[in-house]
Image (cartoon, rainbow, N blue to C red; front, side):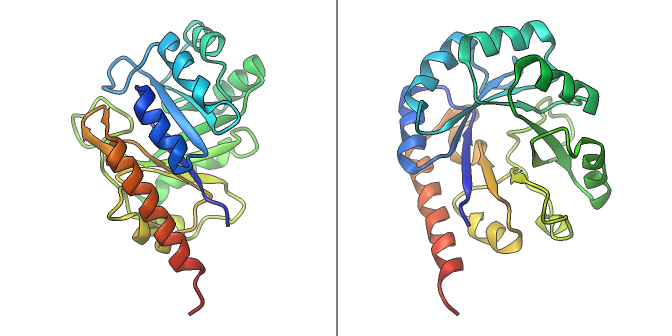
Length: 221
């Protein structure tokens, strides 16, 4: 199985390079003022140039209106839009139609019933991202460095295409990939030295851990 790996919340040329050299299939830019990973569209537009032909650029927004999305899409020309707020199925469909881009819809997971919400989005969103519910008091829908019970995903229909997110790091990615079989993984705070500050060494260590986990999984028993 080919595993997609998305490094999200990038803000510098150095960390974009570390992600691309590590083998990232996706790089994410966050457009949400309350996040320490927020970037302006013009900054993201410059950063994403290095990814052309190498990785897909993902624009992450939270309940953004058309004006915000217009500015982001025009400047950045992302490959994918990630909607990380409370966007309805109708809103997801509107965004897809307006921009002609695939949409990844994020869901916050804490218990099995949280997964029931994806039913209304199947056939509309192109992919799902499953993140942990934010801790009490957090204003951030993602990037909080907390995980959820991955076993909740074991009963999902195999046809559900999703990225696993939430609290992943080099120390636990092997365990996560043994527990479930996502087609993609997403990491942000797990490769940071401080909130919003990606560390190239931690990015490299994460990719090394992913490779070890995949090699172990592929090795004959």
